[in-house]
Image (tube, rainbow, N blue to C red; front, side, top):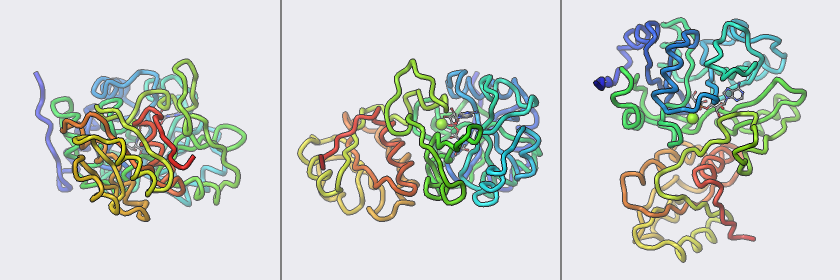
Length: 341
Ligand code: TXA
Ligand code: MG
């Protein structure tokens, strides 16, 4: 028997909190993407997350906490750098990897000795965590492998019938997931680009290394630092081809290659160049924050169409663009064409 998934609004935060405290799953809004949350200290509840998403068991979850004082509940040997980052970027789209305490269940960390931890900024999410008074384990609220949901409706599309409720907090302001930085080694290491840019991290930390898995495909046998990086991700049903280079040259290349009915993800300025294609705009070329807000909706859009291929212009890779370009390239399985070279 499938259950009916309810959309809850801001007045129903208590109901969402009660569900979470009783071991049920709830969809939660965050400033990055919607998450699929459970009481982090309840292993049965956390196991249900993996089932609902079809998520591989070896891919650990992030803990969502109410404020920096909760760090000590779950983490050991916390370096000063963690407090400096929290001061600068929390609440916000930053996840830190730290040594965990034994209280964090193995199912959350996939048996790693570390745990990912973040303090989200979305006001409904903050009220929910405070009201439930428990840390929430939450991956993105999509079916494993699909683009992350940035609206309650998109999450409903993936999770209808599988979970009792989604707290509706509107569209996500950042639109791509949190930045993940590993603080357990000698040099801080960026494991996933996201809402906080590499430049911002370096302002606080000085040297930050960049994990290989961000820039190139990793073979299935390799063991990436963020286990999630080895899986196919963010992918619509049709294959995606990312076209890098100046936006003018990329548009010219796409015009040459795309047939009628293909999908095109492009900057606002180029939309009219593709009258025979199905077009999703990322917003204007210069508005990088908008690219972040639109990328997952754009990728999801084509699943309801008959597009056989999706061509995408690639955003400039500085600031949040590093995260948007990373999601696009992962959606494309790193099928990238550089028109400038
Ligand atoms: O913005 C976000 O981070 C969203 C919202 C809901 O908070 N969450 C999210 O979770 O993106 P998820 O599960 O889709 O991605 C978490 C990533 C995965 O690639 C996972 O492998 C990695 O974080 N991760 C989690 N714990 C880790 C750990 N202890 N060490 C290394 N990587 C870890
Ligand atoms: Mg995810």
